[in-house]
Image 1 (tube, helix red, strand yellow):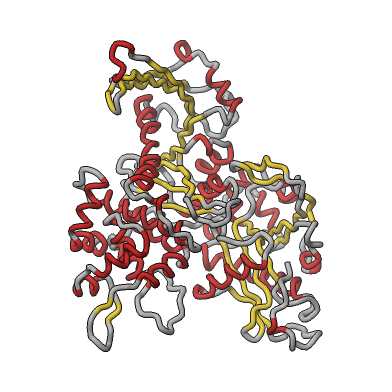
Image 2: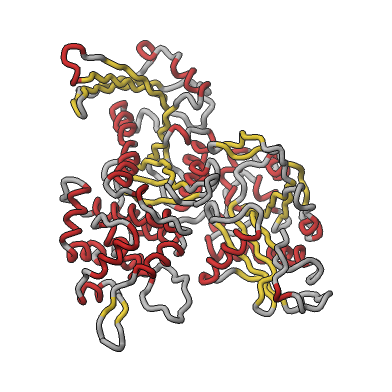
Length: 595
């Protein structure tokens, strides 16, 4: 779209042919400016990319003429999929070879730079695959874009030789699915980045090794790095002029304050004031050349850094710190959480998806997402970044979809365990009509236990289903879990409630007994425990920070503090751990500085 004409172009001669213009990737120190410009001038706004993305700048004499953002391709598009000619299985295996031009903003006023849009698109598509490979380790084969015909004619795409495939059906994402009609179909344009793009995408043979999706290595490094070393890799978004404290030292103070269960930048600044000179030196505080003393970070600097540093950078810190400390083969639970106050507008929201280890409850990765129904998309984007091959993933009923099941097994070489609730009525009805007492091939019942004023007992019945019983990919076993609860506080008038939970898994009976399936199902509550601790012990939702990325960065730092506590065993509870670190600054520093 075209933005309002800035004053810098008023003296530009008409008819200039862009001989001196260039197309390049935005530098790390320009990301905040790029995000602000696109958010201001594009009708959809901008918060962040869903998964992987590239930011481009069209520049003339150090002046920005246009901005473009590319991210991972759309999960589904009937016209595109028909044009490529691939199967659903191949689509999930090779979707990473497509990129979507999700944002395109022309800052120059009309007529000053003729044909700027098509010129910029042509030069971006020439370098897009190479830039993507340099950033993410694999090339691209096809570029795509969805254009709203009510606002734009798509002329620049047509002039750049993009191919029009048809209109979408006009549905918006709702609860992770495109089921909410909005009545504004989009025009779909595609551009093959090489002549044999479609042939390579629909070829059932194996992909070349350098075309496979690349993610963080699943192997632990030879030396575990400390959290401070990981923080030191965060890129500084600020200008060098007047900068004193590094981003790593500012984030270190904030995380130390979270370890002590202090909330917000003001409390973190007060915590920094209590640190000794040796402790300030240890976290890299700024040393005044006039006094020769280390100066604690101010609350204004904490506000600015926590509110403006890219959340992706801090998410990467958590992942690099926690993943090497995750035991091999340990199951992982996935769920999403909405962050209170992550956006000031009442009609928008910010959600995060979190991966939590079953046994240790260690948060190993998190990813924020800004979109209606964003949890499902965030989970899928997160799985692209985290090495989960060979592990079992337990997911909430919200993500019990065929797409997610196929993605986990086919693309990420992992297994899943999914529960079914009435948001999938047909599947729930089918599983509830099975005669489990007669047809089940395996049973297990746990001993009763008493907790929270009630007596509970769980039992599971497992069935190896006939072929095509469920229309989900890779289903190996289905199960029914029966939970009986007796309220122990009612004396003789105790009431018993019985609940049935249904689900299925890709793990065959040879690798998972009924007892193991029941343990995995119960282990999924690790992610709910993570949310409960963040909301109660750390009072995450009570944080009053509302500026830009402050709420989501506060949530990520809380998860980092929780990962430190859970990695350091020996505490009776999370509250006891926070009291320990609040009174012992050196212990907190050791947790931050030691591997």
